[in-house]
Structures are given as structure tokens and as C-alpha cells.
Length: 254
Ligand code: G
Ligand code: G
Ligand code: MN
Ligand code: NA
Image (cartoon, protein in one colour):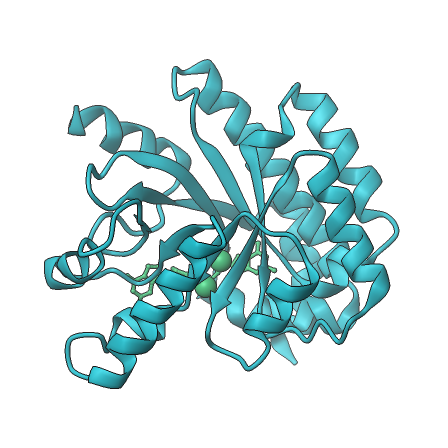
């Protein structure tokens, strides 16, 4: 397949980049962090979705060099942000299960942190709930190790799969990111609205940060602002942007 054949070159030709989408306080709209999202732009084919190429990378092993490259780019950009006066942001990096389980992952992260002189507290790792935890003791141990090193852990796409609460039982996390399929329907589907309320209340009882993903309209924002201390992410605030565009747009906001 085309992706398979070109993915290796993409990495070495610098066709893979990282864009950033703000995560904001839903009440004040203050930016608290940025989600790093991989982008592949091929000179002839154009943009290829990470959904497609991450899947391929997972199956052929390229997720290890690509994932490490993304962590490195995100850390380099975070160091740059710190230098330019954005000192209280965190960067939130998606991890695939394979990446997390690979023995090279932890040493690579330690090395990158040291290279850029960053504090682990400024870095969050997003683990998608759709990957089955299956009480995998190695995985649980690795996540515990990241927590011990003060990295933040987020459960991504919370509520999308069936394993959500199982995750919370077995691992210690900081943040729940509620899958965007919830907010999309809170205005039209009473059951979804109630489930969303229940997830928010559950997360807050557990003292977790709640990020509602996929906020596209002010009505979505009003729905979640019935609660206090909620964070939000979505096109209503900003699309994922290249670092320089993010910096320019936030300078213009103020
Ligand atoms: O930004 P976008 O909607 O195109 O992302 C599509 C999917 O790809 C999302 O589920 C997102 O989590 C995933 N994704 C984006 N960047 C990365 C990455 O760097 N690593 C992993 N593992 N997944 C990513
Ligand atoms: O699976 P994960 O949550 O990591 O992926 C986030 C994906 O959602 C990214 O591909 C990002 O581009 C996309 N995204 C971010 N905000 C919105 C939004 O408001 N609406 C929609 N439809 N997608 C969004
Ligand atoms: Mn994510
Ligand atoms: Na998500």
C-alpha cells in the first residue's frame, strides 16, 4: 500500500510535522495546554490523515521512530514556547500502545527531556481508551513509572470504547478527555446529555481534570459551563495550528 511504501521516506524527508491545538479553561478561555497532533504533508499527494498513517506505523513498527520524533518535536517546541514567554503551558502528546510498551520508549523520553531541559510536569501523555488495557501488568507498570517521573497522564477518547472505567480502576491518571462524540450530541440527544453529565461528575469526584473535546459551538460551551472547572478543546477555540501560527494568534488575542 502507498502509505506503507512512503512512510519511511516521509520521516527522513521531514514531511511529518506537529501541529498544536489549544486546551482552554472553559470559563475564562485561558489556554492551559496544547495537544500535539502529527501531520504528514506529501509534496504530491497532499495531506495524509494521522488516523491512517499512525495505524500503518503501528503495524510495521515505524511507530517507534515516528513516535519518538513527535515527542522530540513537541519537546523542542515546548522549550521554544517557554523561551518566548509562554511559561505555564503543558504539551499533551498522543501515545500509541505499541510505543508505550516498547523498551526504547522510556530511555528516549528521558533523553529528550534532558536535551531540552524540560520539567516532566509540563508534559502530558494521552493514552487512548480504545486500546484494551486487559490488566496488562507491564503496561500498568510503565504508566506508573511515568507518573512517578511526574509526567501527566490523560485518558483520551474517554467514553468511546467499553473499557473506560476499567482504566480508572487500574491506573492513576490526571485527566479525562471526553470523546468528541459526546459533545456533538448533547444538544439533540437527552441520553447523551445525561451520560456527559455523569462522566463529568464522576471525573470531578475522582479529582480529575476534565477536558471536553470537540467543542465547535457556543451552545456546546454553554452546556459544559453549567459545571465549574472544566477544560475544553475544539474548533470553537482553535483548529490545530503550526507552532508559529499558534504564537501569532495568541499574541493577537491579547
Ligand atoms: O488531528 P486529527 O483529527 O487528524 O487526528 C486524528 C487521530 O490521530 C486522532 O485520534 C489522534 O489522536 C491521532 N494522532 C494524531 N497525532 C498523533 C500522534 O502523534 N501519535 C499518535 N499515536 N496518534 C496521533
Ligand atoms: O483522538 P484525539 O482526541 O487525539 O484526536 C483529536 C482529533 O480531533 C484531532 O484530529 C483534531 O484535529 C480533531 N478535532 C479537534 N477539535 C475538533 C472539533 O472541534 N471538531 C472535530 N470534528 N474534530 C476536532
Ligand atoms: Mn488526543
Ligand atoms: Na480524543
